[in-house]
Image (cartoon, rainbow, N blue to C red):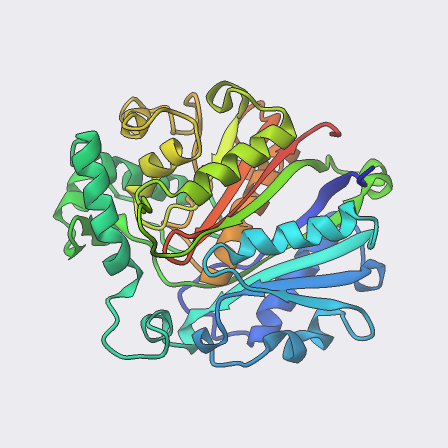
Length: 381
């Protein structure tokens, strides 16, 4: 029987565009210390460390897990590096959960990060070649295809951008805050990659996220409410192959179906209280609502239009402000997972959704080809 696993500590750093007040090691140490403080533990209580980040060229530090070992209390302890493109933060948390669920470790510190101010993101996304169009240049045609096939009105993307940026005003760690945001401001912002406007796109951030995961005994002993892991799933697929649908990838569908099966969820729209979903461009909210099985194909944009994804709606999506408001790429997936944990634990502060019992964390990466998800609840599996 698998060991039960719980999130008992969460820590973040401020996801500012430039964090020149700390080194890369200091950025992670800050997040890790906050997670340990939340869990009421010290560095010596940790059995292993699992870190995740985007490819090494993003910061220009090769094998950062070696450089960071001492700063993360991993001297003489196992430290593992995970990389699955933009979904890496979620995949990293799942690897940490597996270490606990397998019984190999009792208490694991997991961290994910990005310090984009110290690298060249577009150059790195281009595989170290010049002339890259950036992530938005790749995804924009898929967004346009979704709009065409679903007949979604243009303003839906603006609505998501306004919602998430207003949610960000309630999150002390969010990077991009636009207090006077409205539909007209989004509509009038420059077109970056048709049909994606500047305010429908994520920023480039410096930041880190950390969590402490523990076994059943640790979850039971925690003085604060734990978030119990009821299911984890990862999937990947090639970026190109005949018949692939990049608008709603099969890998994402399979990942969602697997994690729902583990958690005993048969009607996600009715049984999930909140979703922290990886939405780097506003149109990916309705696209992922369909891909993750919340609504049938073509209906995702209707959830946004009717206000269902607002805080207080039927299915709040990204009450933290999401990737649209903070995007330290290597940490963005873990932020979704950690924010889901905060919602279940009731520790999300001003952006807390009322009466959360079940939360979903979601991450994707690459050419919409890597996926990671978990389901958390306030009760044991």
